[in-house]
Amino acid sequence: MQETVVRAWRHPEALTDRPARPWLFAVARNLAVDAYRARQSRPPEVGQGALELVPAADDADRALESWAVADALAALRPDHRRVIIETYYRGCSVAEAAATLGIPSGTVKSRTFYALKALKLALEERGLAP
Image (tube, rainbow, N blue to C red):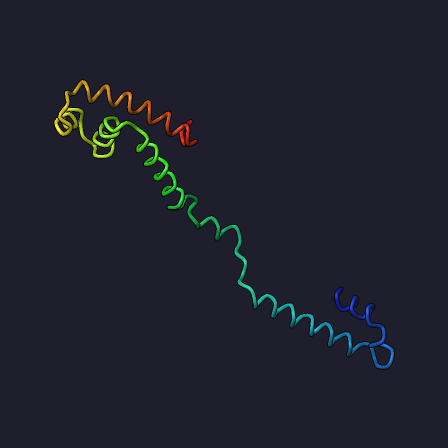
């Protein structure tokens, strides 16, 4: 209604030589049709409820984080990297890792300790560890 009155105010020449009522109704009808068509031409907006259905974490974050961890692992010394891979990624016990790597169990334990310290430092440098 307000836009109809604004249009009448901006175009006073349309109201001088004919009755105002039919012209105002025509303008109001055209504005309503234009508004309806504008709403139909763009996709419907979703509310907060639809956004809550979207998972908060996605695979992109996990992929970036795993790339950064792989990069930090690559920065370790080869003997430290092998111990971490055997004990944490392959899930081997100390004895199994020692047998696979061909080193004593005590060496696996000490290398794991120092490898974890070096990995933590590498992750902190990349902004991934507190």
